[in-house]
Structure formats: structure tokens, C-alpha cells
Length: 270
Image (tube, rainbow, N blue to C red; front, top):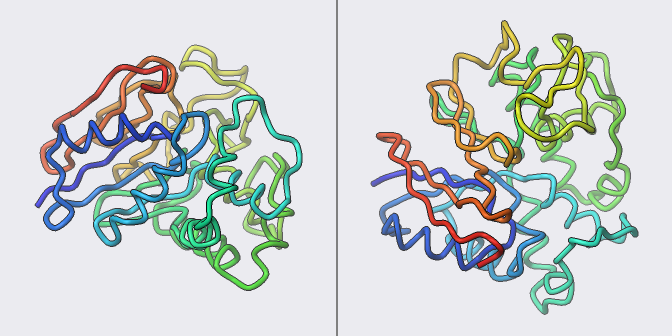
């Protein structure tokens, strides 16, 4: 039995299938941990969702920002569609409601032993145990009877800093934004959602979230995606696995037992 962590698929189903063949994945024996962003921008979001759902207990996937975006537009909570949105096939699918119900029951953060799987990262003041508890607050809303109203209010970048005193939608929005969108933040955990690019593109006063001193989650290995410009990071405290297949890079898997790296390249949605 082996556990393979795989970076953002983003609807690139052909590449995902090639990677599963490369690692000789057997769902009766092996396990997959997916960093989220199963959908969007690539051409085959529908087949990706169907495949991952069909794997049942052999796969754990956390929610990424594109997955949450899909849930929002599925409920009519987001009208403006970006030019690189490739989700129409999912929205028109005969099994769309079954897929959406499955998607909103996926975790925002998954913790197992010394590993924490989360799409983007964690704020520096959160321990892994606290992050898992906070993720549970969001998951309760997504799985509840009033989830449509919840996703309708979820969009936005404020508040951009955590406080234990936050309540209601502001509290939940910070949790979601940190776990699905964070790249750079200040030493106080103030998140900057504008800056992208690599490590040298940090805004004044900000650092990459995982480089902040005294980060409370540093004792665990965080497995993340989201940040394609960062590239592959395979260190004791961080496995960053979005290696930009969509932009001409590679789709990456790491076998957790020995940290062996597997990749398929091609890019351009091939």
C-alpha cells in the first residue's frame, strides 16, 4: 500500500490518467491525496470530477478555490464568469446535482498523523489542530441545509486577517480564504490576495506564508497546491505540489512513504 499526494488537476483529466498509470495506482491497495482545484481552466472538469468521485475511499481531496467557485456558480451565487472558466460542461451534466452534493461534502483540511493536506496554506497563528477544527466550521455550513445561503455570502477578501473574536460569515470567509487562497502575508497574518508570481514577488512587509518565523504549524508536514509559480517543494515541513501542468509544466505526484517524485509533462491541457 502506498499513498500518493498529487497537485492541482484543474480539469486536465488526460494528464491525471497518465499520472495514475505512471504510479501504477491500484484503488484496492493505494491511496490518493489530492490538493484540490480538481476543476476549471483545463478541458475536462466533468470527467475529472466523475473519476475522483468514483474512487470512493481510495481518495481524499480537499477543496480548492476553483472547487468552491464551482459550488458558488452552481447555486447562482456568482454571475460574472471569467474568460478562462471551463465549467459549462459540469453545469450542464445530467449528474450535476450528485456531483455538487459530493463536492460540498469534501473536507477543507485533512490531517493524518504528521501530515496536513490543505489547498493553499495556513495562517501563521494556527496550529494544525486548530486549523482542522476551524475547517470543520466551514464544512458544517457546506453540508447543511442552508448551504446555498452560505456560499452566496462567501465571496470577498475581507476581513484579510484572523481574530479569535470573529463571528458569522466574516469568520468563515477568513478560514476559507486562508486555506484556499493564501500566498503572501505579514508577520501578523494579514493576507495579500493581489500579489502572485514567485518568492521574489512578495509585497513590501509580506513573506510567503510558510516562511514566517514561529509558524505554529511548522511541526507538521503541510501538503499544498495552489501556487504554481512556486514550483515543486519537497522539504520536511512542506510538500508544494502545484507544478503548473496547465501552464506547460508538469502534473506531480509524491509517494509519501519515501518522497519519490513522479511527473507527467505536456502542458497546454494535453
